[in-house]
Image (tube, rainbow, N blue to C red; front, side, top):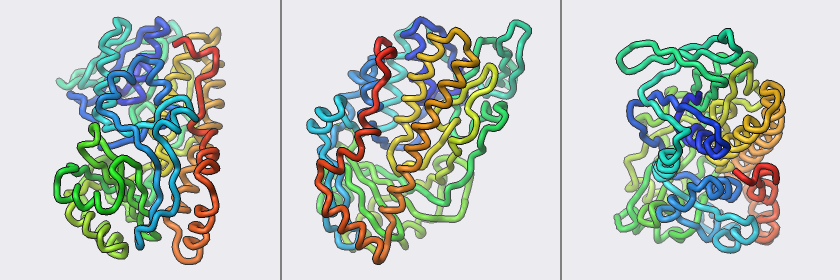
Length: 400
């Protein structure tokens, strides 16, 4: 049983099906809608999607950016560039892609629909669970009509996001908390006024980050290059617990107003902006309990500053599927899986914290950052990411 039919849940169901294991996805939403806009799929994730048969359906809408470029938001000066495109694909043996979240979800749904082992029921809200007499799990869900439905299975996987209800049943699990940051998101058409303004600031075939002490803004192409995804990050007080919400855009406009006039103008005309309070879940908390496992944001929601949220969910799913398929003792195998994944996710979280520190540096610290970036070659910068982007499924798991 899998609670949640987002990226983590759908990837897990497909990986299990390829191992001959049946699963039933229970999705709270009555209709599957992809929240958010763009996301980055680094090679550690894209190679998994290729193995699962998902990547071929996604590629027509995806964009393979040519580089990640860092610019000073005040001067627009290029600070450094990390090559991607074919060079990255050669180095990390899989493509670095940027996609719309909805396109990824549709590709996963399309692949899931080809497997008889996968069943999906929408409009089902998880409410409670209990151990059954046979050693399995009884899970209770509330359907759209307000009726409680009880289902049984060998394992319940919480893939239900940062505000996971399944997580409440895992003793020692961490709770979500507001990070103190808001992500402001919008997408612009490349042939719009805002698109023209963006073209005067950066290349449309790259991932570009504009760095400033008060904010940073990341931009990259979507939908085969027809759109540009913009996401800006600013500090703010906690304003809500939820995904897309309406907040006063003056917070963003005030922060960006201290940058280059061309960038401030882009932000002004690119709206409307949607505010996303960033909540995290400490990966040090427990992810498993007898009959339960957590994956993705339910286990370890990290900040997006390493662009690894979707990738970690995909890695979780495919490694958990392998562990379940090969386990002689499920409880022991879940513990081993958890400890192995924690080490990697914790390292990713630390990389994200380092990125934020560097991207929001100000004054002498920013000057020192710029000097260091200028001294490091693109090859050296790429090598620093080998541990992250070069991750591959262990050899024993390659036959999924």
